[in-house]
Length: 114
Length: 113
Image (cartoon, rainbow over all chains, first blue to last red; front, top):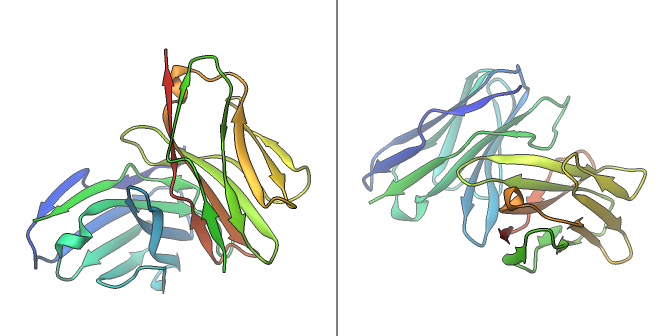
């Protein structure tokens, strides 16, 4: 089974801190995604990556950056955390050639910014 | 532009009753359609998908969805639900080569004994 692992289940950070959310997949997938999930809004794409060192902005990239130095790892970075970034963050991957839909999700990281 | 509407934020239903979770999309081009399920404290899992061919698609756990192009809908149905079906269900739409992928706001299915 494909496994997508997010390093933290819960995180509490202070406003202004730099925050790293880590995601690792074990199936050599090309595509990786970062979403945030908020009640009533569903999932919104922050960034995605279709190859190592390749990234593209999603629908809500402001305040976030990403890093993909190795194929299995996709990191989401909040340069200066703000309270409006309190949310559930979901990482996903898929192995389709070219861009494909997210197929395998991690269990999420619930981030609280105080 | 594409969008996905899930009109019902919550659907309560008794065990063994039928259920329909509604999903409508807006798109001027051909689409691919998906349903995902999220069980409590877990990530999303792909439940079923429509890419082409038969408009009726089925999952392994008894759910089915029908692509209706004229009504731009992709409603999810199950004839008899179980307690274990309690979860949040997300409809999603994509176009062409999946370059854009949009999720609906989700419907929480609460199955009561």
